[in-house]
Image 1: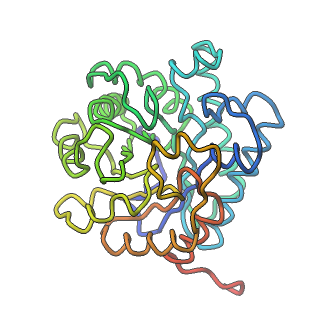
Image 2: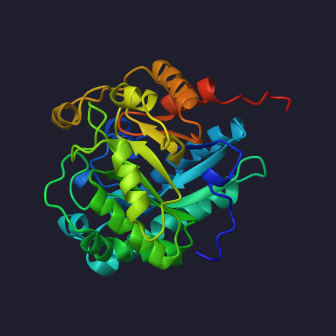
Length: 319
């Protein structure tokens, strides 16, 4: 992406925050029905767009308050062909929705970005299947072909980078990384972990990162962890060496429940925001490159604010 002018989080001394659990916030706090747990259909009408704008504005304003950067993650976590078909979207309609999701980020950034709070636009990508279970798998070549159209749309729409979230096995993540490299798009790979700190495939995180770095046409810009609670993987971090510096971002769940328990639960476990903030501080001391702080399922503005209070220095009203 030759026209990318914003310094990305792994290239900057400025700490960055991102949002919390978009879909769980919309479902449990806004009381919205999200078929297939997809947020991008809200872009279809003005009312839905306003809900999304209000959501992202609140986090952008929090970033400004802490003089932190902000990473806008688009609404396209479910924006791939399999999920779009279930939602009744044609390929043309899906392309338009993914493009519109990036445009929405541009609109909000234009109003809120400051010199002290640089703002990055990321095109969010999700797994082809479920975010908790692997199901059918793809080879890296199949994954590259499958995800390339969404990556291309994000590139053309002016995203600064793309981020693949809730990756459950290396081959799909590798395909995304290779497709992004072919398009000259910086890519972030975010793995999800089970309660034993391993990927749903059973592979240890350290092995997944080392394997992907070694096999990719171009190594990802950096890695993240999402949709797992710190208690699930902190022991793995404490025992790690030589690969921890590749982890730059963290979007943890509010709940320490397993994926299976969360999937079956009719209620929202919001956990303890202050405790989560303290756990992030502990992880910041372990992960030397950690520079992107956000949340995943069950988290909302309260959690990200608590993380900021623990890990970042607030700016006084007179500053």
